[in-house]
Length: 208
Image (cartoon, rainbow, N blue to C red; front, top):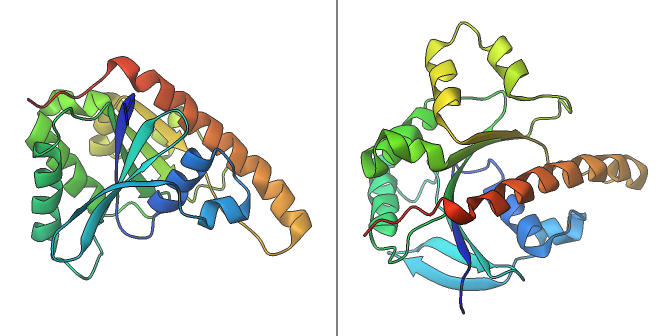
């Protein structure tokens, strides 16, 4: 397959990386599309499956990675595996998406930032988009987030260095009427991420 763009998704276990990749590949935010596996491409495995790449109809490749919190590996092992994945990429990635759960910003975000910097240097953050998942505050944007975190100098500096920041939620509900409202929120989230994906065409991270 002649892949047009490649995207690497990083983030702790449970933040919604897989669901986000599913809606991107299926271009659909219905509940069944979120849970259905996207078209699988290549798999990079160690002792157990560690990374899986999915392709959409536009020939975009999305690589889902294991995250900190995966009990099969230690933090150091996960860092090593991700570095190996990036180092072994022949072409590289157009962009890195760092998925973090909104409202639960832990030390994990800084582990990932340190990992990105260790591989690409400080400039690598320009090709990184932070996606805050599970954010049900519909009007949340970078300006509001910075105001809320105005006393966190480290976070303010990070927001200034990364390429983009996206807030959204893929929450579903068993009640059909409630889920219909949530579907609109999911659609706006998907549209924001899709727009960011299309901007990645000239930002390829060539590693070799």
